[in-house]
Image (cartoon, rainbow, N blue to C red):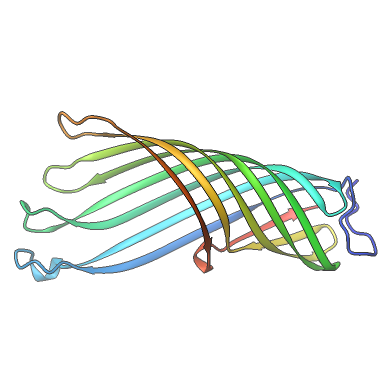
Length: 218
């Protein structure tokens, strides 16, 4: 059923929830290109990064405070960075755009010291697909396209607050995880050859730059 809490601050077996997370990251860095062949007014450049993500999810409690479910995710990002080419006496911009999709089942356990506030830890694993394209505005423009597919697993801690009994507000600021991807990159440059590569990583990413806010209805 949808009745969420007992007197001992547990979320009861059979409770269902739907919700998700929304995140936005933005950063700016300033660069100075100390090359005498570049006009002074063109030496100061900015590197900007913008990323938006959304991840709807749904689950059901198979035991008190223990839920299983699945989430899907989508993210879109854009990087703009300065570049310099020795044959061109000026600074130019390189722009990269990335779109990613993922799907992941998860297991989540809650600890609620009181009925209105608590924590949960989420273990998830899934599949991801990414498409990226980069281009430059140099006198001889070039572009690259990268297609990536991979698998991942991670542990995400979160705070959860219940302003009313069936609405949970969730706050996360990073995760501990492992991922492995295989990518193929092609270039518009004449006579270029597609490049295949594999990448794996393990690490912890925590901090305000990974802050996401979500909500679920129980």
